[in-house]
Length: 307
Ligand code: NAP
Image (cartoon, rainbow, N blue to C red; front, top):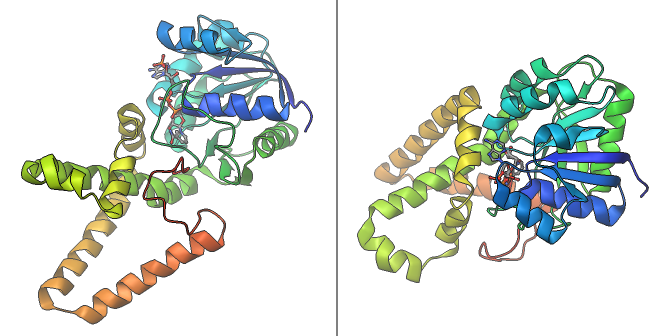
């Protein structure tokens, strides 16, 4: 694969940015890589590891002359970063982001994008529960979807270049509109995280159990929940605060379903439970058939891409 952007600037140097840098380097997609992070500590790690060609002290410095700027900070910080870099962007450059929520990020970022800059939001559906500049790996996006989520019309050439970049990083790329994105992701990623956080929280409330039995005998079900519930608290706080409507919609439905299962259990309605679990089992089979997971049990121990 040949070089797609001469100069790429990463704002935020955590799991997603460092994975993009490793994958992009391996495929030769980017010329010079500049990066910056909020804390001096992360910038020092990036320098020590040679993560970027240049580690800039500020986002303003980092975006100077960049052809592609990738915002890799928590969803709630995107607007502030956009405001800071807006006046310093090179005319004709592309600004993209990797935020897990799209409508709120678009509303926060777009007003700060000057005329002639292409703002094309995106979201890689890949992640782990680890964070920081040392958590990334080049294979993270391999065979996972990245959704490109433009808000209305965007320059077709800029869009196609960004698509090629993501394909070069290993991803399958699809274009989706922001509202649909936020609803789909609420079902497939955000609600499961909220449920995992709750389940682990409930177990923690039952101290008697957590202190000993849950850890000692942790079966695959609970262990998978704890892996998801170990995800970055800042990232997930921002996701829920910025995807409120879809969260409310899906949580309402979830509570209704949970209550219907509760009722079936109370009434001893085994047929309902059996039919329900048969239907859900087929969904798992569908995911495996679509190549988005393997059938091998790893009990949540693998480096699995989970978003
Ligand atoms: P991460 O590993 O925690 O890294 C976040 C980076 O953003 C760090 O470099 C951090 O700087 C910087 N940052 C944090 N708060 C900031 C603020 N208020 N202002 C400026 N910079 C700030 O996070 P990540 O997992 O790469 O996630 C980055 C983005 O990708 C998020 O928007 C998230 O929604 C999205 N995403 C995540 C996943 C996933 O599973 N992790 C998957 C898909 C998309 P310091 O290190 O200096 O604190």
